[in-house]
Image 1: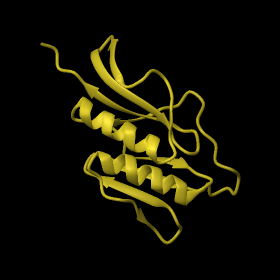
Image 2 (image 1 turned 45 degrees about the vertical axis):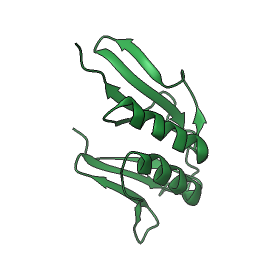
Image 3 (image 1 turned 90 degrees about the horizontal axis):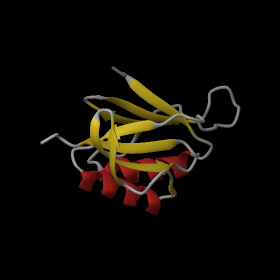
Image 4 (image 1 turned 60 degrees about the vertical axis):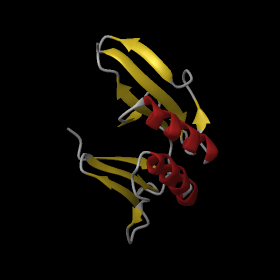
Length: 128
């Protein structure tokens, strides 16, 4: 459904370190930086990008927005969460764990990145 997601940053090095670590914990390669200084994480399912705002204004987080990364299992979500905490992220929402929802059981882990964007990992637990 999505071709890419891009978030703004006020500190590219700090943001790249955070996302290299968290997405690296999920098996993705470090970001490729283009000639404009933007970072791109490529996957078959889409592209995740970080950039300084092109309008010259400071980057800010989307209040109410969340970007979710799909993971294969709860262990991947936990590794992602730990990598994020170790690289400038802050915990938010409930601790990583199972949540009951209208779509069944989900294993979720939430963080705020160094620019305060809310990001999470999500694993859909198969119904028995």
